[in-house]
Image 1 (cartoon, rainbow over the protein chains, first blue to last red):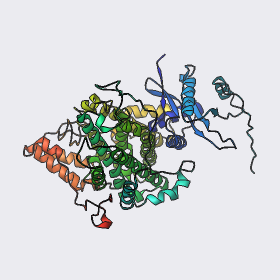
Image 2 (cartoon, rainbow over the protein chains, first blue to last red; image 1 turned 90 degrees about the vertical axis):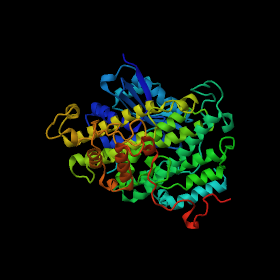
Image 3 (cartoon, rainbow over the protein chains, first blue to last red; image 1 turned 180 degrees about the vertical axis):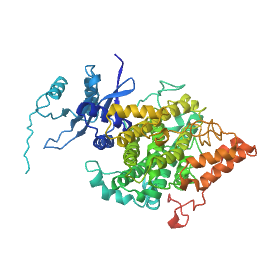
Image 4 (cartoon, rainbow over the protein chains, first blue to last red; image 1 turned 180 degrees about the horizontal axis):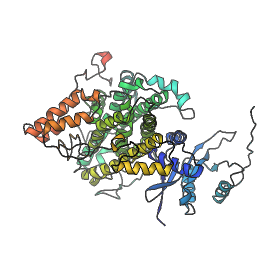
Length: 146
Length: 425
């Protein structure tokens, strides 16, 4: 297997992230990823990560440290978006991205990382559990608005 | 924060050279709602090696005062800081020219933030010049160095890229994508500087610079999509010409291709000029490839990703596919094109690497490759005159390389004080 290189995301990764997202969702959404990537680059370009194999980006993980949300004052590393090209899975890329992201969170002063997974996303739930995430003592609530 | 006299000098400079700065606070909540408010202050990173990381003195403690460096190394360092300061303040003057011609409020807000952060970077350089004793390195006092930097105008800056006028908001964007990218390389190379206060200044600047590059690339990505759909205002030839205007000046910011080893030897940078330039070219090529992919996707919206990739590959290799040709896409000019400094200065090489022997045909080729408004500038005329003189053998190459047009501007001290110094004693 070729070496995997994990590095911080930059603005030239947007097209590759669009490509990965398109392979997973079937949708080409460049504006969505441009907005998301510039948000994380603007706020903390060192935390969010991409994985390269042979110089090609095959995975990404975007997140940042925030505090004071939902009454949780402590700085929290929020894992918000990630994806690995289906052709590049089962190579430890997701774990490498997670390790790098969490290390960045720690450097930024966070002692806890959090994320949310939709109930129907069993595959994602398995992945984050494998990465050491456990159910948190918080409830995700919603109310449909007419 | 800087001592009052320097802080006030920069604030005063800002009033004259960046009058739209107060608008940033107005647009901040809308465009940067979760971000900390902008702070005009110096920032340092603690996470910096205490030992020299490259060069002859690798492993020895980094200098924390200029006098701890070898005299020649200290001279190189001082030149770096002055040049860096010049670029920071210079880019604000350039952006200000066309800031309010932006079509999209978001693009304008991004440019405003870029300018404010460049001001902070200039502030950082002034901090470096005024917080240490440079008297073993130069006879010029700190206040005079600051005065000199703040007195520079577009046309009198250290590097040519900062002496070009912006002709439209397209320049704001292409400048951010190409010239700030050189800035990123310089800051990255200087992150290992043997002068610890300088190295410590780099990480916060780099974090901000990452946004500047995105503020260039993302508007370009959206413009090429509109260009492909035919519903925009900026077409591919206009972008291509702006690239031709800036790319060569960006390459020259690295210094002569054959140089830079001294900085590595002194532990001030970790790449020589050609190595850094090669990486920069590779990155610019990728940037244009991605823009072309975006263009192809928008031009053929019914094609799949793989089909669009195949179309791009065929067109890039010279085929015409469904009416799309290589000339419809963006292409990085040859690194030797329209050069005025360095190894390829005044060689008559075209955008695609073709060699010209007739100087008038070469000048016509360059003119046809450049934006119309820029063609009418004193900068282009100055280059064309020099190109003719070098070709005729009437001006030595070395002299031509050192020549830069001086724009006729009010220079010197603060304009509201009729040449009173920026730095008040």
